Image 1: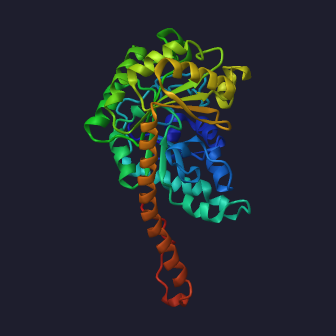
Image 2 (image 1 turned 45 degrees about the vertical axis):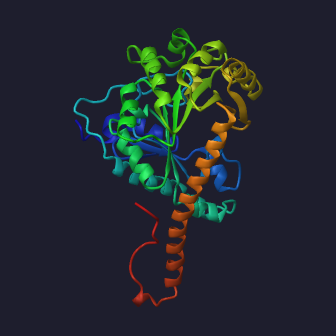
Image 3 (image 1 turned 90 degrees about the vertical axis):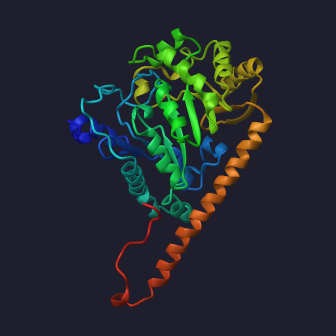
Length: 368
C-alpha cells in the first residue's frame, strides 16, 4: 500500500484532471503548477505580492508535498475536493525530502521550457527561472500533513532558497517540531478562516475534530517563531468577511509581524460552491483592514490591486527588519547566480572546441 503511485492512489480520471489544470506530478504525492505571476514575470510583466518579501515571481516554484491530502474542505478553495482527500492510506510511505525538492525543480524547468522560444519572454528572466530561488509550499492540500516537513524546509533553505509555508494550523505539534528542529521557514503563513468558531466551521468545513481549538493552540505558538510570521485572512463576502473585532482578538493573540487580507477569487472548483459576488473589491478589503488596524495598532502598509491583497505591518521597525532580510537574501542569490552564470559561460566557450575533443554532458543546471 505504501508504494502506490499517484495514478494508483488518485485514479486515472483524477490525475488527468490535475494535468489538465497544468499540474505536473512529482513522485507519489507531490506536485508543481506554474502560477500566473510566474508566467507574467517571464514576459516582463507584473510580479505578485510576494515581492514585498523579496521574491521574484519568475524564480518561484509553487508546489505541494501532499497532493490531495487535506483535513479541511474550505468552500472557497479553488482545488478539487476529490474523494478520499483526508484518507492517508494505511502503511503509506512518504517520499524523501531531497527527492521531492529535486523533483519539483526538475518539473518546474520542464513546465517552463516552452517559454524559451516565446518572443515575449525576457531572455535573462528565463535563464534565472531555470535556477529557482524560492519555494511556496502551498499549492494543494495541507502541507503540515507531510510528516517530514521540517526536513523538507531545511532541504530547501540549505540550497540557498527561501521557503514560504502556508498552513491551516490544524496540527500545532508539527509547528512545534519546526521550532524544535530549527526548521523555520522564511515566511510562516497561518491561515485563519473565521473570527469565531461558528464562522470558521462554515468557511473551512474541517474534517478533523477540535479544529478551532487546535488552530488556537497554533496561534499561541506564532510568537515563538523568529522568521516572518503572517496571519492570512482569506476574505469571502457574505461568508467570513464579518466581525473585524473578532479577527483583531485573534491577531492580538498571535502577534504576527504581518497580517494579509487576501480577497477570494472566483476561480476553479470554488465556482461550484460560491457565487461570483463573493469576491470583495480591493476597496472593501482596505476598509476591513482599517477596522482591524484601529483595534490592534497594526499599520496599513501596502496593497496589490491585481492580486487583491492588503498588508498590515506591526510597526515601522518590523518593516525595516523585513527590508534587511531581503537585502541578505539578495546577497545569497547574487553569489549563487555568479556560479551558474560562470558555468554557462564556460559551456559556451567549449562550444568552439572541435566535436571530437568535447566532453560529453548537458548544460549544467545548478544544484540538483
